[in-house]
Length: 274
Length: 247
Image (cartoon, rainbow over all chains, first blue to last red; front, side, top):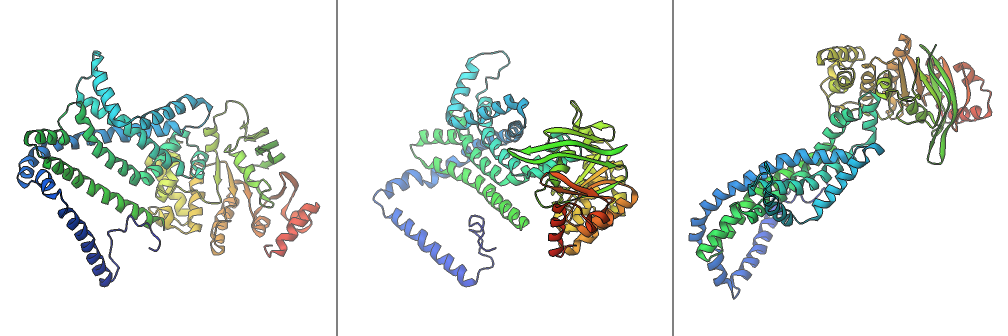
């Protein structure tokens, strides 16, 4: 495809000649070779190497960190389910037409403005320490609960905007067709508008979820020992930073498949629309 | 009793008055074709009859029900009026069969089996049965428009509104859609048709209405309108059509 987006084709050399492939390989090797040489020959490298790239410490800390990382996976998987539902609700509220729904629309606007505005880390702190301190009967005191709750609040605001863009992108003639057949407004939304909207927003939605995966580390700030907290513990025990690197590696290994999957979906959608 | 009556219908978009007092009655089993230049108000009039656009003033009565009265359930009324659009407006995420059965199932509360029986009968009749599982973008324009007509018919409407249904089609696909409409007319379907196909209008219409700048300038039997138009504006319009080789 000529003039297509570069992002989805960046790793795609199929269809190029073997000469292009060779050029790509050589230039990549030269490029990264120069960077590696620069780093390795820097004055502080021996020190950095010792404190960040210690093989033994890496081996020793990885199992515990990987174990703790399962908590991150749990956190964002649970959060994602609630975000998908809550965000769709907010987006639908925001796209309800007519003066009678004004209060609901206003509420949805205030919500998205508020939770996109406050740094996630503050929401985690405020809810994580504030809500249990109220000591209200029936309100959970588990910091993990409040950590996940905070992520759901913040990310629902982002994802609601993604959904809303999708709903707005469905041509008004679709609603006209649905309503003219005697479907109610709610039925038109449910069977005609939202299904088309959701299909269109899957790539940007997955993009937000990549952000969420990383932000699952923020839950550590109010107590639960997930991968980042575990690596801090390991660092404190060894005075060596290698466990941070191990944690970073785990996060990257998890986001790369999702990122490639997102690229693939975008490319597929573009093929379909041709 | 007429199937559709419009009395002094006015409609503005902002400061532009598109319909300036329309009076029109369509009898049961009558086919009325509206002709007129683009922007003369044909589409707006059809959308008003379907209540997709609220009218500013005037009355619209379908059968014995006044649409413009207070407190009417527009969803109930719309089930009795079928409309087909220029751009088909099929639901792209649904198969042909689902496009046709959605409204009968959700609005008329038919069971899936009943809705599908009804849909397949119609698809069969209009030569689309083998397309039942296709998605709209896999069909030709003519097939898509026939599906749109079937989708409207599946609600068993008493009145069909057709809004330039052949205008988006390649010339070689126009005939198959006009054939379907002709069949409906022969069956006695009451229809109000906005069209640019003059020879088709002449052929199929019981009555032709010339819409010009938001008013009905002239109406009468097709032979009269096309052969001996009385109004200068009608004469001008038809002259332009003839010069364009479209009549």
